[in-house]
Length: 164
Ligand SMILES: Nc1ncnc2c1ncn2[C@@H]1O[C@H](COP(=O)(O)OP(=O)(O)OP(=O)(O)O)[C@@H](O)[C@H]1O
Ligand SMILES: [Mg+2]
Image (cartoon, rainbow, N blue to C red; front, side, top):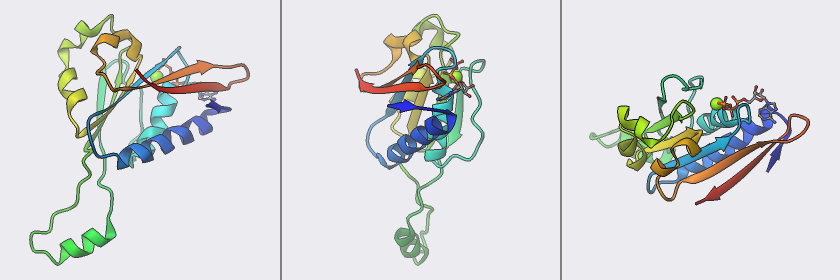
């Protein structure tokens, strides 16, 4: 996939986020790899939009991880039915949190000791996007989706999706 500018990459992220929001089973980890400025954070901005998150996404380089709440998907039929039910409870999606992580400053997986990394990536309530995932490759769970970003001439970026 090739994008010509930021907006196209945000749009690609958004489409990906919309699709992931519907996916109900299993933990979801996106391992993002690419040089400085190749578009990882730009993609994550779109991803968050697609997940329905309104908050502004800023790079978590210094804090390692940021958590955002994923709003529930509105299901009109279900809501109407539930309103007649006295036990009415707002419908929640399976996915409750989006985690944006950045491993740029880490040397290896051992540096993750400070956060509950394993717990976060194995919880099916989470969608986790990790920039510079290659730095902590051994800590990335099997079944993660790897997304690679490459610079092309003229501000374009190439994005390759794969499973490893
Ligand atoms: N086609 C494009 N897609 C995305 N970004 C582009 C494109 N062309 C130019 N840019 C610019 O490239 C930069 C991409 O920055 P971004 O923060 O997304 O990269 P990054 O991979 O997260 O870098 P870092 O490793 O520093 O976190 C932005 O300044 C953006 O405006
Ligand atoms: Mg970034």
